[in-house]
Image 1 (cartoon, rainbow, N blue to C red):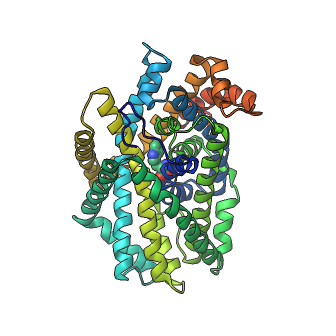
Image 2 (tube, rainbow, N blue to C red):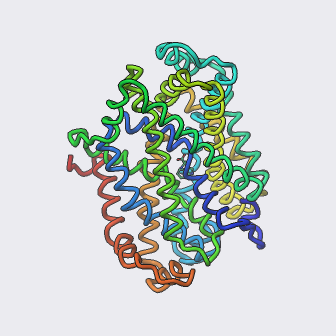
Length: 442
Ligand code: TRP
């Protein structure tokens, strides 16, 4: 997203371009790494139901709200709040988003670093052996005093280099070809996983809700996962919205990005859980889950070598299209609010994030709390503020006009407006307070 700060706004070359870029931000490690591991730790099917509910009930409305704020203002998130509500502190949503971006980028690069290590291991052909040996590969790598740090830095530098390159050649070009390819690979993995002996138990774990597993923490985790996976609640999507032409239907865009993102997460689950059971593993492996499970499937596939290399390469690229959206938030903030030179802002941010990321490699506690604070605290709070802004600060007529700017009446307006004004703010706050134990409804 180059030239964010300049007067001639650099747009996307095609309608598909923006959707691809927004989807590129949404689809990433959140779908393939985070979703299965959090679901595995949260008891399976009941978590999935909650997650789907949050995507539809809050995810789509919050994403629509972000898109409409950005497109209405024709500015990135800070400028947007400043110009739509001059003199009021709404831009703090953007500031909170910047904080969240720092935290997310820090632990995200660590996991992306693991992914690069797995590219390397896949190329070397060393992802073979029994499930126990595969397990050890991950544990030994994580215990190393060098490689996890090294790959994290490599990933951050790659992210920075792409941002230096700018919007069209940076984001759009890769996303359009590579994400569909990743999708196809996941489908291949699904088919293979479903054919494994004992796959049924995994499918049951994923799709059969066990309601006794639900508690306040699980509900909050499902909501946090929905926000994280959709990249909402911190203004990234508002910035993309500012590039969407008026001729495009925003509600439809939000819905298609959300559904694509959700489909990929669920399909990743369909690949992983049958394999978990088929290879005699447990779903609550924690953050190493995907890395411990998938190599076992590749090992059983004809052409597994090629598939594994391709898969980890594509996953790294998916992580990059997400991390660039995170870095861009920070860089836009520094360059537009403080007049910092973009290249300086990019490298200074990369340096700071590198230090934070090193702390995440060093300590699982830091890693876990960065993840928790961003996904389960900052994003939901950002989401609440965003819907409150659309519901109470903007005029109803303005909101409607923006959603109908493509020239057709939208049938969902009343329900959207109702959710944004009354349901989402209350419900998100409730889930949040209940999940962190401030109020207690179990
Ligand atoms: N949604 C991305 C994923 O699933 C991660 C991400 C990118 C993100 N940008 C974000 C999360 C902004 C929250 C906010 O991998």
